[in-house]
Length: 576
Image (cartoon, rainbow, N blue to C red; front, top):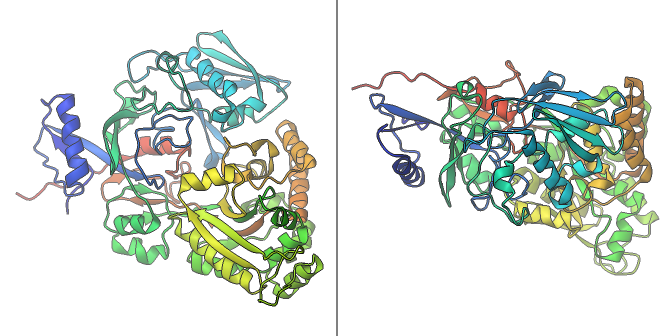
């Protein structure tokens, strides 16, 4: 078998020639590469697939939604990583400590000394202040909502930065550390931060050097100035362009990839059975939900979506276990909570509220039809389909990202299930970037989405239902455009709650409000997709070695800890 993780080159070659060689090998001959152990120098390459891309571009701007999927963490080291599998333990990176004010109106970070940018310039507190000033000045680049919390930033000394807050927040550090830190000496020359692609990146992370890039992917190699170079045992990351689930599955089954995170139907049959080195771990994740656009362009559809009876009827028309069995190949559990809260947080739920609203997330097509009739959604022209009260035909579309086969199949099944209650729905697929853009600008009717996880249910409720996140520069999760002032107030209270009892009470009320209104239709609690190949590398985070979250997904902070834990396996001698 060819060893695809090692490319050997003569150490006397220049950097230019080395890059050219890598480009040639990478674009033309990969994966047919043979490692000659007798050569003087070897380059260890880890092949990763964090997400699918329809096009590979030299965009490494960490503030941009269009950046390449190895930009965050690998190029731009965070201040702190909060390890969600270790009770949110802080793993200090560019910062060495942080301290909240007693009144929760400020937080300071002490920065690590002796860190250089990849061009050799020293990392400093000025870089941190400059980076946050970008997010504060340009809200469209503030994807983590920094502006709603930070009032001002101060330089306490050359190794300490202080954030003065607009309002108390005991959890603000968890949000602040998600913002990328960029080099002031490079970025202060940029005229347009939004359009800037950062094609020649300068970073503090372990892999900053783009050695080769073309339409098929790119090679991202070691930062020569990395402050933890002794912990890094991999020379380069290879990102190959993968466009769809089918493309991914056909290639991972041949052993092309080392570290991935995508849906594989019947994973035992279509992946792990091919080799004892093909491993996976599927930690529990948050739910997948159907979203209604409360700002739908059609007035009749918009009015319809604002009827809770309509939203409940849609929910009760769906056979959730069938969705899991067919679309997710059994990988998941039906949603028990009408609010969409993850099953892993059952201790936060009021059992009486759970049982009160469980009928609305249970299959009951007859009651669904009764609810539709109650809001005068009937067949007015005898064609077998329900019409709007105005007499206009009701034809809905549900949008999903192209290439997400589990989502695409789920949407098709939902369309078929809704036909049983005489509602006409068609499924539409869009490129992932277009999918996000359409949700960001309320240009859709129905859509499927998953949600990020957190150490408590707060992250789900905050990202999914906080009206502050319904601006185009935020992720898609709250783009149903439902707004509830009480929900917003509760979400601001959680970060300043001082006792567990207060926090649990806030979550219980949020759970009750969202369930009562059936804002979205929770479908099933899915799993986090993680596949790894043990043929060439060891040190993987696994169910038996749960050091941190194993995900390779973009902006999964723990992936930095993971890549530094990986080591190439010692290969047996090749036969003469």
